[in-house]
Image (tube, rainbow, N blue to C red):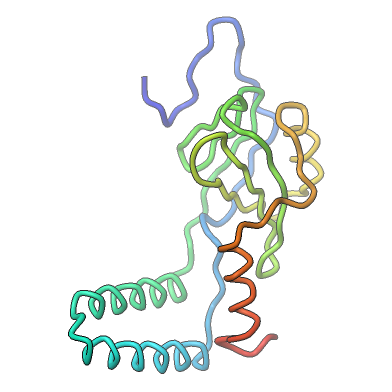
Length: 172
């Protein structure tokens, strides 16, 4: 059985509650100032790493910068999501309600996100697009707990602090 498709349960027939399409990932078109600031930081970091003779780290830094550039210039594709009585299907992966511990909503760059916390593994982030979050919340609350404010890890707190202290572009 393919783990990316919804398995057929002999006693329970799958019932689709909501289907919607949204971008596959967050996207924000970046301006010249953003890339100039990234370039300056990377240049200084690369010079330091070259003097330290860490050529592998130079290659890693440059590959990360290339990834940032691509993700900032290439818009995401639209994908389909389904909310059913058995779980949530997103981009061909099916997540059973039993595998999920809790969920909450966040807003980033003017887009509403559905965050699912599995019992094991990393968080699952699904963009809601134009769909109303109340509709999703009503259905998902029947199966898994809703968390109003999730616990932030020290990494999330540090990233938030750093992005406020060292902005790469002016707020709009």
